[in-house]
Length: 326
Image (cartoon, rainbow, N blue to C red):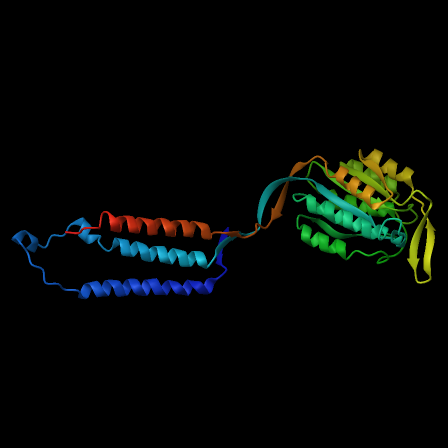
């Protein structure tokens, strides 16, 4: 369903001016009476030619042109309601570790901020994809379900902070929650990008069990281990900078990726993390049905074109066909 609105709707009141002028014009011509000297009796007949009947047409066309220009100045726009459409894309869930270890500063400014910045850039490039967000630490939950409204998703990413939920690293729970968001998806390509910097140390679901479930639903999992290879990472605390051990269960992350036909990546700095997301950005695409709102589009151009076309026609008729009226 298409709706039309006018941005400068108050300008539409100006249409009353050309209409008033048109009414005045015709009243004036009704009052006009002239004394004409006839050279023969044929001119005294009541018959009038088509040209005489249409002699006011150029003036009428100018008024119509003026009205169309006023409508154009009022900036008509069209918008459609929510509608089903088909687009190219995949369904992606980003599962992000938000445990306190993500505050380590081996990635600048820290791991979680680096992960957020790169993920936001990734989301911005995948315009047609449905993307959701799952966060996990000692527990997991869905921060944002699958959506094509990436502005909402990006705003949620910006508010993401470490330490907002019970601490720990429940990789299995984070992966299981992501699978739960994708299991009903009808997209051919379903992907989870799981980012963590630790070892699974809590939660009721084993990471490999969650990976098996993902495989059953045809979900491919890309795992990212975040942290330097030096063994220690600086962390800012109220007592100054302290160092924490970098301990990533790469074996489990590799097994998850292999089991689901995905791939494991290691991000040791922000540039490598950005490259990882760029690699994932070339994933296959499939057709999915989405519900989206079409933005308003300007509709003033046709009114302008019609106005100038009618105005041009009026001047041509006035200078040619109506130049001499018997």
